[in-house]
Image (cartoon, helix red, strand yellow):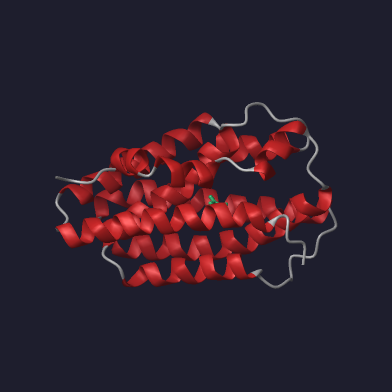
Length: 207
Ligand code: HMH
C-alpha cells in the first residue's frame, strides 16, 4: 500500500490538529494576542523562513525537472516573503538581528538534515511545512487588523492551490518509492507536525 499526503493527514489527525490549531492563532483571531508575543513569533518566523528558503533550494536540487515550475514559484514567493518580513519588522521597530530560540534552531537543523534524505521525503516535508501555515492561518476564520494581513499571506486561495500542487508532486514520487522511503516520509511528516506545534508555543516564551 502506498502512502499519500491525504493518508498522512488521516492517519495522524491528532498530531496535525496540534500543529495547526493553537492558542496563538486563536488569540490573533480574537485580537487579544499580546504585541510582545506576536513580535516574538514574527522575528523567529523570519529567521525560520531564511533557512526554509535554503531548504527549498536544496529540494530543487534533488527534484526531477518536471517539478521545477512549482518549486521555483515557491522560491520566488519566499523571496517576496522575506522582503515583506523585513518591512513588517521595520514598521514594528523590531531588530531581526537576534538569536534563534531553541525550537526555531532545532527546526532549522532538522530542515538542514533533510538534504541527506531521498527526494520523496524532502517533497513530503516541504508540502507539510507549507500546509501547516496554510491551514493554521485559515482555520480560525477572518482575523482583525493587523493580523488579517498575516492570515491572508498564508491563508489565501492561491497559496492553497500552491500547497495542493506540492501534495500532488509529493504523491507522485511517493507512489513509486520503496517502503522504507515511504516510512521516512511518514516520519518527516510527524517531525514537521511536532515542530509546528512547538513553534506556535514559542511565542509565549519571550526571551
Ligand atoms: C514555522 N512553518 C513555519 N513558518 C512558516 N513561515 C511556514 C511554515 C510556511 O512558510
